[in-house]
Image (cartoon, rainbow, N blue to C red; front, side, top):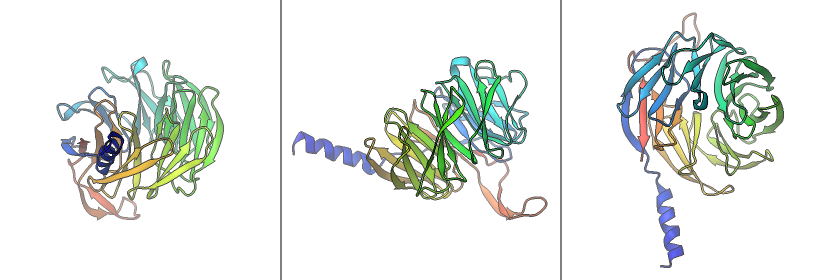
Length: 332
């Protein structure tokens, strides 16, 4: 067997399985729902949890701190160069700024649009962008001063976002099945690109080197060229996707789904992608954070009880068992 053939064989075997498996379950406890979470690459994961953010020490497997007194937390953005963190308060229509080291709040809440959901720090413009779900716009905040620099109408309901670090922020429009390209320096919409056949995009991640944007849609990943706006390819993924992550260190793309599956895809090149496997997680484990330092993946989870109708009526949903909220850690 020649060296080239042997190398290809080893590569194929490596891609046959990612090696990701559950290595830890971390209990957080408490009550209430959750949304986004983010890893800081230094052993901490910031987890949205109803009216607080739980800060988890992943080495110790325990909660190391909390940021409380919030209003319907959705997401957390980190701007380490300014020692600042930013939290989107969906029920408060504002953003809380906090100190990354002490976790203490800094100043008053920053006003945003209606129901700020996803939130992202863009190093290219030194701004934080809060994506406002109900007002269909984005609030740009100076990461150093905490002041609002402007508001950008995006033309639909924004979901996850990704930044290229060069002055562009890309946002999924869930209700339009498209991606908006925001010029993060001029605060204008540069492009709006369709994602067909991708429907209802939720999760988003980006490989800034190959200029590929990965959008998690219903049972499908769409790969978009960030320069031309053309769909390069699509790949099958799990059902009920929420979050998407890309690991530049391994080339793996992850999609976490409510059906209890983590889909793993490898970016072989800018034009070729390989479905590696679907890793079993836990029902409802749909939101996710990737630690680019350890390459581990964290999923928010809880145990579910009998369905209950919300106060005032409406469709019954599975109830959350009190005290069962926590994280699953997956690694290789």
